[in-house]
Length: 469
Image 1 (tube, rainbow, N blue to C red):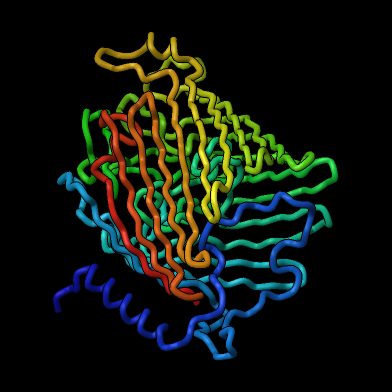
Image 2: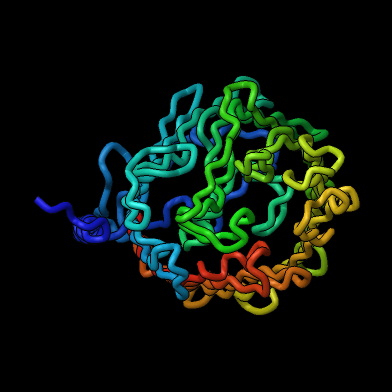
């Protein structure tokens, strides 16, 4: 019997699942995860989610009619996404995304702890790889969360297991947020929630009147799901040009338990309406920013110290964040094969400029710490990078039709590297259960070796349909 093509299988599974769920009226509200991602709470001590009253069921329609209810108390969604590249480069497939995704979510509560599970079953018609790799988010299952939350003391929360972690004040710009990201998902058109990859960690949160402290310990390094050529083309320095599936990056990743570990901390409090925070991190560069003499990439050791503030100003919100990166495997900045230490800074402002129309802008800069030493040690034919990389971001968000339609545009632009990335999104909520989304990612640049310039051949358009339950 011939084996069905992966796209044919995906279309059959999608049609069957949507058809079965469409037979029941939709539930009354959007599930957690739609819209903007939820930030970690910075408030005073409170019971962990789930230790109070049981969550309300969503199985009944607002008019009293029964809606679709998954068995065993599961909630979640099923989604199909299809996208294509605008420009073919002969290195990657023409389809940028072609997948059916079933997310299942379940919470369990006891008098002493709460347990949470979120997992995605994925049928991917682009990579067509069912081999499971939970660390890199490959295969038929993406385990998003599997954790337990307890409150051993009135001022202390402990959360252990696989979880989504985030902090900092940047809008799609991360300085002190050294938790793993999935840039492949971000650039091919998956929902924004998939930019944050899961961590296998223990988070301890202590609360007091003076300040609140969060400490996250990751016993084994969790790398970013970075651009490696398997789905997105990139600039390969060894080849001196754009590469993709013909030169997939195989990085040496630290993986020893308790020795290749990470620790991150945040001390924060509110002062007169302003949120102040100090950060620390010790671990590794999240992407392979170093290379051995043999040419194989690896993750150098890294420490970061930083701070942030956020507060009201002239009817809007102003944000600022700084972080100093110390690259331990190149402490004096003389090794051109290892990323130099640097200082990162951003300042931003956001406000509503018209009814249901919000605008936001940021200025972000990366400044190399030992630029002179780096220049002196460049090899023959190696070009020196700019000492500073400047990036401006602009975001505009318009809500229409009783906030059922959201139009969003976000643009990254580097004036000195002359490249950028324009993200366009249109999301329409057909009902409490059905949602459609369309958009695109446009990459542009003058040179193929700059951050966004290398991605020009990955410009894409996509369309997604989601049914929540």
